[in-house]
Amino acid sequence: MAAHLFAAKDHAAVYQKYRFPPPENLQGVILSYLEKKVTSFHLAVDVGCGTGQSSHLLAKRFEKVVGTDVSEAQIEEAKRTAHPPNVSYLVCPAEELPFEDRSVDLLTAFTAAHWFDIPRFMKEVDRLLKPSGCVALSTNTLDMRLHYKDCSEKLTEIFQEVQGQIFPYSNEKIKFVTDDYKAIFDSLPFQDKERITEILDKLPMSVADLMGYIQSFSSYQIFLKAQPEAAKSLIQNTEQRILETMEVSSRETKLELCTRHVCVLGYK
Image 1 (spheres, rainbow, N blue to C red):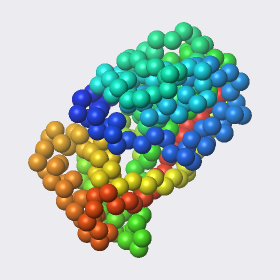
Image 2 (image 1 turned 90 degrees about the vertical axis):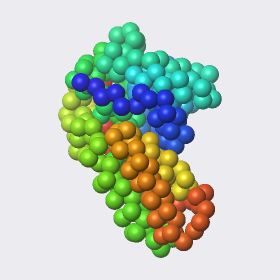
Image 3 (image 1 turned 30 degrees about the vertical axis):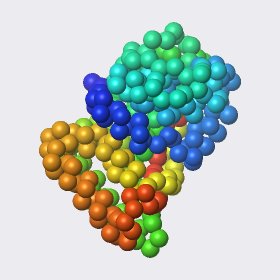
């Protein structure tokens, strides 16, 4: 069964504001693979596109990009945000994509595939891709660190404490992320496939943006619904601890979020 965790309008607004597009090194891995494999760049479908950050990137390479998501609120945010003219959006489940057989050149899912009904989704992947079409399924892992001057270790400890507090509210499908997409890789019905697990990036962001990013986590949103005062206090206290550790007062002070992504790539 698929998990529908991003349907609320307030969550979609936070997601649109604070979620970052696929970072540079992850983009490089995927684009390098496409250059070696893909022969037609007509149609790319970005499944579980959320508010469209990843769909925009594909528009530079493909004639037409369609972002799909089961959440109407997410798609509404995507449509409201400025996007290239060759990008459009549809509300539909990942397991029932409204495209013809063998019509898609590239099918992607960025930080989304683990929420799908994997067996049904893989049947759609096989149905939709053209011969010589590609699939790219990636996610950021829970292995994240913070970097700022000489207090990176302490900042990372604070961040990991927050992750630990909200992790019990995670959906069971987070298991696909914690195993670095191995189960998803094994389910991909192609012989020509690979899994890359050490894609490292550094993302500059303000302390305010970091707090917003944490609030975009599905586990935080579940925590917020279950214990609203405790969830809000967690964000306020975490922000204060981070500012004190950095010895700054401005929420706009920049630090770096160091991420590790995994990516499953396949060629039909």
